[in-house]
Length: 364
Image (cartoon, rainbow, N blue to C red):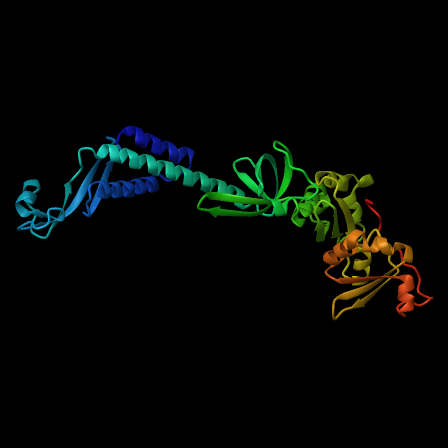
């Protein structure tokens, strides 16, 4: 053991933030283990490390006895008195038992300990840095792909984008830059693992927070998000200030704000609708871009029957039922859609009922 080791330990404390005392304790434990393993000893030993001289000694604790029966555990009174004449029987004495070639073994153990501690420290720093980024959006660069994952470099770590979290309409190419939603950060035996998503509704929410100052500062609140990644999404927003147009703030002048998000999501259509605590108004808004004649509410079953103009029925339901499905997911209400003629046949609508226009076609 030489002074270079202690210089390395000092460097690790300053540059890697590894506590010097912890490193020395770990090193001592490793040296004891190496001694017992290589020299078949069960003796109670400790390692005396001298930083100034860069040396170390193996010291064995032995009990002073009149007659020695176990040389590893005991030492004779006569031998002990040679060290210090004040020793008596049953005293415990530390005797140096450093083997001649222990330096080589010690160097190997020191290298392993330092390497392991550096790796653990770096993992700890990375984990603490990224643990606070859960449910946040980060920008990364695609490094590589395999059948299960797309691996995205987020700076100090490679995150995993699983196939189930990818947008079905999106192609991923090495060196592409993209924004991802961090779904989970965990510390494993193999180090920190970060899982990301491009299809999570949280990505849409965070992108609006980044793009719309009114959402970021809290004057406009995102109430709910429903998303079928890569195809269409709905987001409901609300402002306590009645003079503030929550939907208009999110859409922006000539749709500029929402278009930035649409572009980031590779053309995914986004309906921004006004939230309301009144289910009639909320469900009507959620079915945008379809127009709604009437909404019948069943509070007990949290279900609604929505009546739309005949010519708007297919629009209200949407391709493969998507518009109605997203509206139901957004509002939390079951939605059964009927045309005006069908509603009249069933007695749900009378001739005196008037047409009510709600919603706005944003990106059809």
